[in-house]
Image 1 (tube, one colour):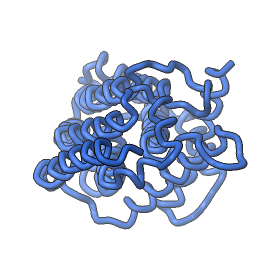
Image 2: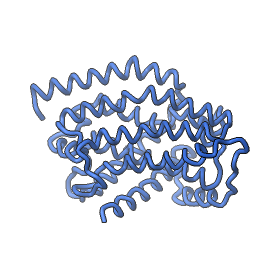
Image 3: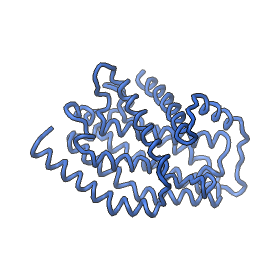
Image 4: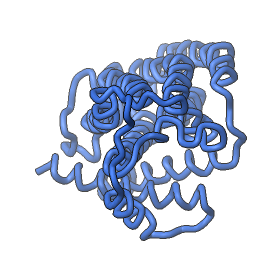
Length: 299
């Protein structure tokens, strides 16, 4: 029963994020645009590039969707409302997100086209940049909770949310999340201005629909992870826990989309430089501060 509820919530969340993304990109809030766009994609002819690597071409979008669904599996919607409450849930989330890189390189390589291939390898640069900025803030969160269980991480924030306890970690995690989901201004794998769609360039019809759905699932998963790690998860007054989780998740997703749409595109080399020179330094400082606070003033 809980699995069906979570899948339904995920479907609604993906549709809401698609609406918000359309608003961020086009400046118009249309509740029907995602549905009509999906129907249009499903009605198009599916074109297979002549010299493609058929295995990579077919598996790339599906693997991306699987990575997103695995990430969602360890994010609690409310007490007891989680697909699998693993003792290492936060670590499992990071492991699942690693397959985003594999899927995008397969999707870029499979069609045997220049734009897709460049887009896939650009994402490799992003992965090297954001990988540590995902792991290190999670380490600090787990230090406070004394657990890698996502449920225990939420419960550890009953007195004070982690966004107030470790704001540096929150900022770094959100930046890394935008890199994982290749949201603007770090959307180089699909770079519309110079790559004509990048990893999406050679995909049409249902295959492109799966690729775009997978990205929406990943955005929802990362927004949900941000809520779980830093915004108290289901904790909140008056309303049921699942309502708080849903509202916070949509707010985080909307914030990432709105922020990205107002910033200039960042080259992967610059993103890598900032992440390693500044981001990792701040992440280490965050871990140190959380450790000191936990020893001196346990909260």
